[in-house]
Amino acid sequence: MAASIGVLGLGLLASAFASYNIDQDVHLDTVGLLRKYGYPAEAHEVTTADGYILTLHRVPHSPSPPPGGRGAGARRPVVFLQHGLVCSSADWVVMGPGVAPAYVLADAGYDVWMGNSRGNTYSRRHTSLSPDGLFNSKFWNFDWHEMGIYDMPASIDYVLETTGEEKLFYVGHSIGTTIFWVMNSERPEYNDKFRAAFALAPQIYMGHIPQPLFRAAAYANKPSELIFKLVGYNEVKKGNPQNTIFGTICRHKLPYKIMCDNLIYFLTGYDPEELNSTMLPVLMSHTPAGASSKTLLHFLQEILSDEFQMWDYGLTNIFHYGSLSPPKYNVSKVTVPVAIHYSIGDRLTGKMDVDRLFRNTRNTIGKFQVPKDHFSHMDFVWGVHSKELIYDLIIGLMSRF
Ligand SMILES: *[C@@H]1O[C@H](CO)[C@@H](O)[C@H](O)[C@H]1NC(C)=O
Ligand SMILES: *[C@@H]1O[C@H](CO)[C@@H](O)[C@H](O)[C@H]1NC(C)=O
Image (cartoon, rainbow, N blue to C red; front, side, top):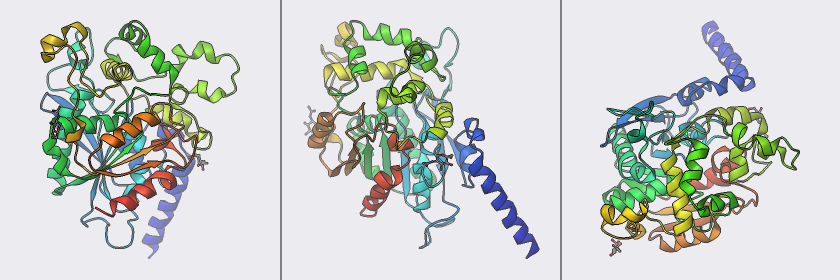
């Protein structure tokens, strides 16, 4: 009795300490964050067919599972979360229990897995190539095409094998949706491995992206040169790019000072009610989490071409593809039931592009506009009210499959 009261006391002390000390969260990784808040966490390693070593993160169950026996030891449906551009698995946990999607889904009784795309903090390794040094170009020579045909199939196979499940749910954010469409159109046998998919702020067609800065970059005469100069050749580095790029602009007083403090919000949209500014140092310590510059450039190519197609080599397309323009991904090969979630405050996902994706998707669950006008791109993972606005809806939809 005394012992259990002692344990309870320690637990209360630990949780009080945890909720008041977010400074630590700046330094903790995905597993460290989950464990700090009392959730079981695992890291798994997956090697892709082309040698990239990826880390998957997992919350096998919640410490406080819902009634009805989806606790430790029980069989739980699997949900796989795939982050967006320059993000990582940390984005699904960084806002903490009760708010961040990984906790919300674990608490709802799911076995939660999180991918990490090649090149980010957790997946910056290869069996023979080095990401560092003068001769690292080979390592960084990839974009979301390879994430779709190599990373995601390897990750999904690993999760199904480890859990013994036949199918899983997929939740992708931003380029996490692009990867899903690439995989299921290029390797259609993977369609059978999903119960349903939820596309948050999808980036399949990008011809109508609302953010004028990305348009400008795409239309600039030599977009590749511009971007390479901004981000450094081959790797988009982890760090604080606003200090160098927007530092000059933001020294002046602007109406939304906070947009300047934070490059990501400046580029993707800003809803003051969804951004918990106390958490900003924590968010910025985890994001950007690294990527290849080619991934960004492929994204810019999509803005110009207004097509969902493979990497454009320009004059040498004929040698790579046997045609003058790159092949288009055949989206009608994607047969998984898909729900599309978007918002009109999102500066990266255009409404017309969403409508086109919805029209071209064969098996749709629905198209859901977030009922909040300023809700923006990163709010899908970081938003203070993302549980109420998005994940409660997704959990409800999942129960149909
Ligand atoms: C913002 O984050 C802090 C630190 O985690 C938390 O104490 C506070 O309740 C949050 N505010 C809102 C509006 O969610
Ligand atoms: C795209 O895939 C569909 C379904 O498999 C097929 O009927 C169609 O011929 C394909 N289109 C092209 C251009 O390959």
